[in-house]
Amino acid sequence: MMRKMIAVHSLERQHMLKLQEAAPEWTIINSNDPQVQKEHLADAEIIIGWNKGVKELVLSNSCSSLKWIQNMGAGVDHVPLAHIQSQGILLTNASGVHPNPISETIFAMLLSFTRHLHLSVRNQLARNWIHNDRMGEAHNRTIGILGVGAIGLETAKVAKAFNMTVLGIRRSGTPAEWIDEMYTMDGLQEVLKRSDYIVNCLPYTAETKHVLGKEQFAVMKPTAFYINIGRGKTTETGALVEALQQGIIAGAGLDVFEQEPLPAEHPLWGMDNVIMTSHTAGSTTEYDNRAVDIFVENLKAYLQDGKPSVNIVSLENQY
View 1 (spheres, one colour):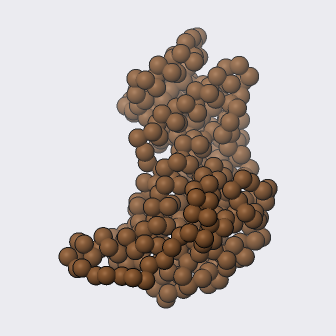
View 2 (cartoon, rainbow, N blue to C red):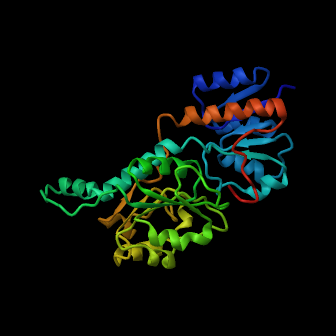
View 3 (cartoon, one colour):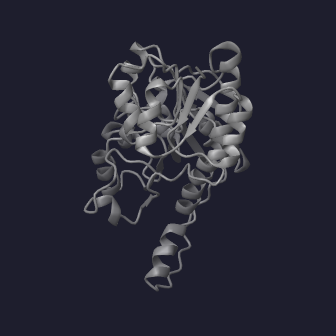
């Protein structure tokens, strides 16, 4: 019986050719049709992607054939990690596809706030010609990056082009290129106090839930801007709204939210000091190309050594 893998989100022909070249003796199913997926999921050794059908399979604890799931996003807080761990299934993510587009989104927000472009767009729509000569400058400011992984490092690299001082937080506290000072989470308050821009790149885990709340916003500079492209539940939305309404911080750029989708009546929609991008910071025409390339390299390692070589999710650490 031929070994089988199934992609539950249809891949383009060019991507299928790469998979077939890497695993010519495998049966490869490529379909977003629920009925087709139902026929093949139960005896698939590898599943590429995640959807309702895959979740039901995992929760049924009947994954005798399944050895490896490739999540096509970086975050895995939507995946039942305990069930995957109990069944000995490998889980990998698509970490590495995001540094370029998300670091660009971060600086698009950062520069928009600093140069008041978000206000200029609002004035243009209202046909108001308003001159503002009280804009800031990003050069020589301090940026704090919470969660220094691939995205955080690329953001730090870009920040250095603006001669910024870069403070970083990562679980290990291990120093990294482009980061002037690295801290563990114990140094969070210090980083928040000193930063003109705070960029949240944190994953969502039991340890990071609401790690940004009322106490943390209170220590930030009143001129500071908070940019969250991490997971929504790392930030207590009510505390953020209060900080924005009371002028405790200057503004917020948000790609993710604690509650998604954000209700139409939510106060964040009407705030002039908020930029929202509806979870699109990582969207790019290059996304699928990069994600498939990562998977193919892992597939080659899996076929040779029985295990993917990169992006293996730590089920204990939840990322």
